[in-house]
Amino acid sequence: MNNKKNIVSRRNFISSSAALALGTTLVGPNIFGRNRLLNSPFPNSKIKGVQIGVITYSFRSMPDQSAEATLQYVLESGINAIELMGDPAESFAGKPKSSLDRRTLWGLMRSKREGTITAADEKKLKEMQKAMDVYNEKVATWRSQVSMDKFKELKKMYNDAGVTIYAFKPNAFGKDNTDEEINYGFKAAKALGASHVTLEHPSDDEHTKKLGEMAAKHGIYVAYHGHTQQTPTFWDTALEQSKYNALNLDLGHFVAAGNEAPLDIIADKHDHILSMHIKDRQTPAHGQGNVVWGEGDTPLVEALQMMRDNGYSFPATIELEYDIPEGSDAITEVKNCLAYAKEALEG
Image 1 (cartoon, rainbow, N blue to C red):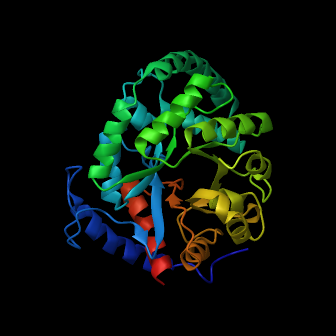
Image 2: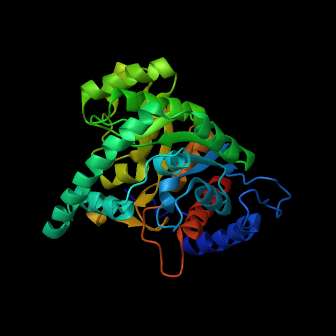
Image 3: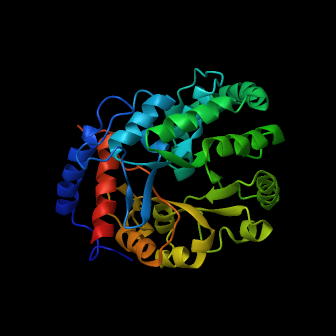
């Protein structure tokens, strides 16, 4: 399976990216800057009826991870709707600070997940996880007591700048989290204006049943994310357990898992997809790499056009995971991905 015949060419990708970048850089240094190119007060990444969003994890390489800086990155990228990671929002709300280097931890966890971790890094990961356990106890106490006022304030700040939050992803829904933390996560999502929370699928039927039941009480959906363990039936049990259980499909990981006909999962499950991560990955036969959009095997163009042509309303969420080229940065690369999506949808 390869979408080479239908992809936006690399040459067109770069040229359209440059054109889009010209517009979005006019947002300016202030988070409430205005895009004057189209005389529009806000960025608009809803294209031909398809909402293109971004998960703020895409900006993890940027130096400032505050809520204010994250909003600026989103605006400069030309995006108007997001899946918000937990840290920017929780830091804004006063979460206890940690001395752990999260980027290092995430990198080690990713290497572990992909089976590429070294023995030395495995030891380092275990040490960092022990320190994280101690810190997580402090966070659990904070979550059980925190007011929702700061989350409402953050929502207003983002909305006033033209950015809506459709999903929230705090590390609060795992099997090791307390019920108080889980309830907190749903309440915070509602305060932020999100329709759903996202989390890694726990591969535990009892836990997905519990989360679905708790979600129903809050009126907030739970959308489960997957990596290369995704299959066409991966979510079926959770979907049967509760109408509040749903999909946070990752199309790139689905392809890298070796699933055939990846567009079928969108067609078959579209009523249960609340958001879909888009990235370009290769099939197992080609190395499973995360690559610049248009260079892999993920049918991004066809998927986006399917959403457009069928009126699917769930957002397509840019997740920047390929290596950032030298001389570039996360904002520039998210702009490039948005430009790719724009050309696909307008083609």
